[in-house]
Image (tube, rainbow, N blue to C red; front, side, top):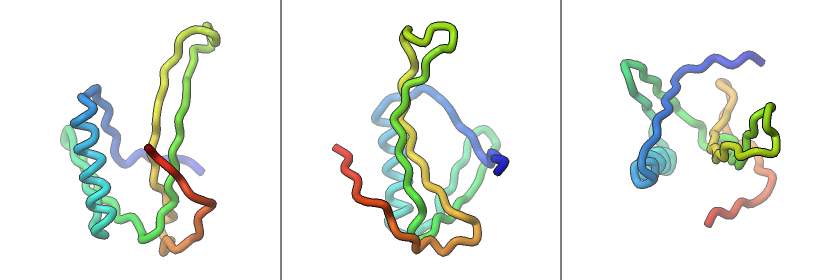
Length: 98
């Protein structure tokens, strides 16, 4: 399925600022509100269903020219749902984050 990017933002920032953004998303999810993103003249508002799919990925990307050299580490958090989904799907297990 082709991907259409509706909004993209990338910037190096302090961990505390990132935590504030994540907290805002968490608060909106918990209260059932929509999530609005805005930066550089772009904006989008998303309305996650009650039970979206939650994906966390920890990864290491290495250069194809130096696969044993230092790479880039990443931690991705993703919410996914079908546009016509009510979001009541079952989960695959439990998650622990510390």
